[in-house]
Amino acid sequence: MAKQLQGVEAEYLFFAAYLQKDSEQENWDANGAMLKNFLDALDITGASKKLKRIILTTGAKQYGVHLGEPKQSMEESDPWIDGPGRPPNFYYHQQNILKEKEKGANWDWVVTYPGDVIGVTKNNFMNLATSVGLYAAISKELDGNLIFPGSETFYTLFDSFTYSRLHAQFNLWAALEPKCSNQAFNAVNGDTESWQNMWPKLTKRFGCHIPRNQFKVDVGKDADGVMIAEKPPIAEVAAQIGLEGNLRRNKVEQKIDLISGVSAKMCKRRGRNWQRNMDWRSTFLEMAVL
Image 1 (cartoon, one colour):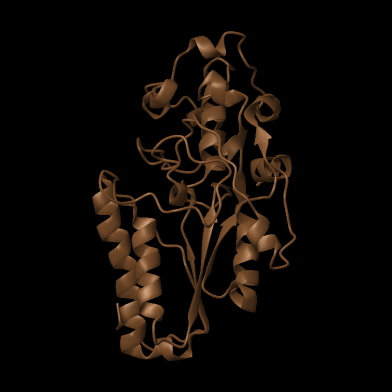
Image 2 (cartoon, rainbow, N blue to C red):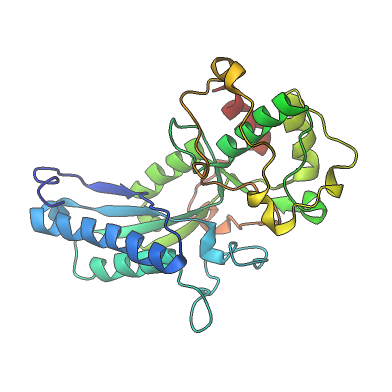
């Protein structure tokens, strides 16, 4: 890695690399090693001497959303969910690596905690817009029924999202803002909305309809394991919806098993003069057009 980075110089570094493994321990090992090896390589090449700030992107798993119902609202000062009986969380590992490497260095750091990311990038399946779009496209070609992929309870709860462009803008701002030094921030759109409001509008956008008995189809906590078709029936309309290549099973990493609501406080970043927000409808509908 040091050889590959030879001659590379920068003052601001944005680290958002992520490698999905089969277990939380493997995620801890692999993603921690990626960050540490990268920072070590910068030391070897001497590039770290010119660094001013490193911005690390993690996510809402910071608050244990993958373990069950999280504390509401989620705040950056909330205690980490670690220790005996808790699975390893590689976000904590990466942040500890960052803090340790920063000791005696010329640079400082910022960490962001985005929620479910809404964005479109070719061959990037780690965002909710792609998952919902594919689910809607397949459902339309089957029978037009777009069944909410979650519990009836969650249908009326509130959720928070992160528009990829807004997150990018926040990263750029945080890289230069002195008040963000060595701080972690929630990075969501700034609004909250229930799926009870969102789902009918998304259904209409994709030309589908919601069956009256949608919650009689019990997906519960295993929504990601429900197969709605052996072979996605969208080959005939692939060009029309902009789909290229073949979509392999387990390729889409962002699940849409919507079972628990989340709300992230934005007071901390607003207190440092970040005032930009985005509503969920603009976020989803813009992604549906791209």
